[in-house]
Each structure stands twice: as C-alpha cells, then as structure tokens.
Length: 292
Image (cartoon, rainbow, N blue to C red):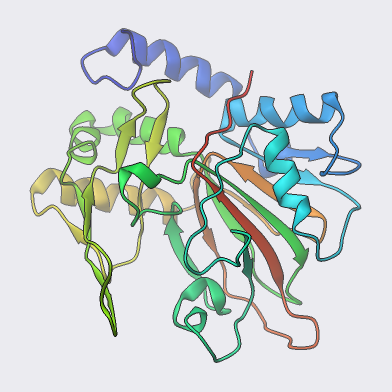
C-alpha cells in the first residue's frame, strides 16, 4: 500500500508533500469559518470546517453563540463525526473538561491547564496508551482572559514535512517504538497511570493517517538516549519556538472554538480575574475528523 509516511516511498511522499504545501493556509485568519450556531451547522458551514481540517488538520469557528453551554462543543463535534469522547479523570462527569483556574481543592490545581501559567508545546493525551489515542478535540471559548491566553498552533503534518525534508533520519528516530517514555504517575494509592513508551509519529493502520504524540516539557519525560533522537528533539524545539511560517497564533474570543486532529499547540500565560475568570470547554475524542 502506498503511503507518504513510509520512508522508503520517496515518490509518494513528494507528491503528498507538494500537494499539502500548495493547499496549506498561510495565516491563522485562513482557518476561520463564521457560523451562525455551532450546535446546528448549515451544510456549507460544515463543509468549510471539514475542508480546513482536510488541508490543515484544524479549523477555527467564530459564532455569536455565547454562554456556559457544554452542548456547544459536544454537538459541534458530533456534526464532524466525533462521538467517542475520552472521559479523562480530570474531566467533569459528562467527559468535558472546564479549562479554568481551579479552586485550591481536589486534584486539578496540581495540573497546569487548570492554572493561569503558560503551557508548553504538546499534543493532548501524549501519556495515554495506544488504545486511548486522542485523535481529535474541540476547544470552545466561553470567556477569554482580560489579557493573555493566546494559543499557538502547528499542523503536525507540517512538522513531519519540516523534519523529513531536513533529515529523514530524524523522522525515523521519532517513529521508533521506544522514542519517548512518559514515566508512571503515582498517587497515595500507588500507580495512578502506568508508564507509557511509544513513538512520536505513528500511522493509523486502517486509514493511513499520521498521528503525533509529543510534549516539550522537560520533567516527567524520558527521550531515547541516542544521537538521532536527541538531534530530532532539538530540531523540533527550534522549529516550534522560533515561530516558523507554519506556526499560527491567535486568541480565542467568546463564541470561538478550535476543532482539530490533535495538532501541536501551546498556551500563553494569562491574567486571572476571579470576577470574570477565563473559561474554555475541552472535549477530547478517540475519533478523527475526516474532511473531503
């Protein structure tokens, strides 16, 4: 089977790469689709979102619909073919996480998404086993911070192209089954999450889509200790932190949201105002968005 992600199939890769580069958005504004109601998309709105996900693995919707309604991300996701919600342990009982500065009770305050601190580049669920890969997510803005909280985004397929064109051996290192290890997480009862070792880049066996698991954090992570992996890590960090042409930055306003195939992203720190606290809803899925 022909695959652009097979390092031995150079022609297939080059055809896919050239088509991808020709269609890829040039700026964050190109990702935005105005929708009347994300809970009930018109067919034109839905196709516009799917088209952007097909070319860039992400889209931004902008709507006048505001308010604290978890049906917004849930129903948006369902219209894009996302149904298998990942109900992680820090999410609410309905499986959707309110991303806000947490009160100093429970488990959430110990984790950076529930603070106002910056979050380094990552893909969601990089600590999950293969059976629970986060393939897509919706991030819906209810209230923005008074200052800060911008996101940077990069299509993981563009990261793949950038690395493969620079040195295919770096991609080979990132596709190794022992490239990246997330150590076990302990709590008062013992092992709360088992150690997870796996590749950074992998290819879905049924649909041939590229998946990426990555974090730029330096604690609670172990990279394979060989020259190719170390060089690959350094190169990717340089690409992400020097704001290359394929890194998009934007700030979600109320009524806006990100739908994506778990692309690389970060978050800037922000000002926390208890009177008007920043609030986003995050829904993570085991499904992938397949566009036209």
